[in-house]
Length: 278
Image (tube, rainbow, N blue to C red; front, side, top):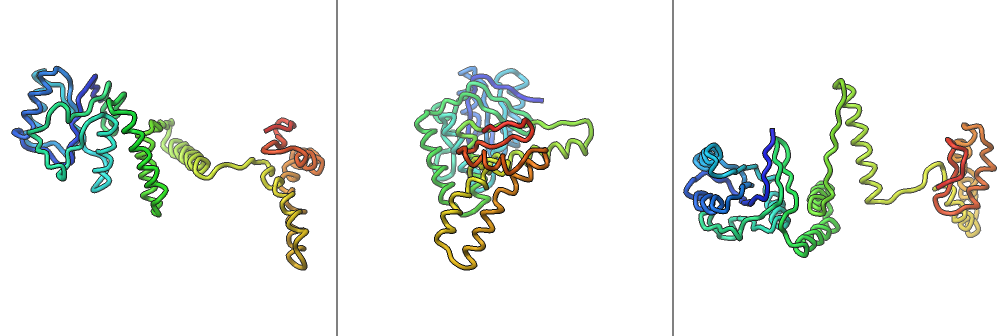
């Protein structure tokens, strides 16, 4: 089951909403506009929740409430991200704004909002591009400055949502063991992709090692004794992975290694097609 709100207003509130008296003025204002309302808060319960249900059943106001994401200070920052994306204001205690005094200008807006049990997706928020970019730059600075892997991961998640780089991958299978296996493969692929984005990639097939040959040869010239012997051993063995791949494929490995050395960049030998390619 899912709720779809078209051209909706968005209330972004840090705390729990329980009192109808606090929420009623806003409901009346939004009802006059004839548009649906999404409420993002720590929770909505009691009289406030009952009022939303009754108004929905009567057709007076199409409203939906969802729990705010995250916890503590991280929740506050995520709500501010949403406010930036939708052009609204995050209502927090430090602002000193009471819920009953909120006006339409304090609400965010989005062209389309889809809410299901697990996710809330907002499309075409009304936030200003300049403010969104400013928020993105701020988060990127925090990513560079933090020393915590956990904090960096959470900041990257926020950045992806702000920059529009969020995707949902659905993994299904006929049996649970098969599903777990597929899920593990997808997770491995995600980790590899994330590592490639953060740290870069190297060509495979033994090419990356072979490209180090020239540097090692230069280093050997400036070494003496055991160091020179060790560097020479490394140089002689550095093309072993490529030669072994070729030998296993029935190709003369030493000839292929010489040919790859003549080329540049990530160009290597594809043993599956017997071709030199990037």
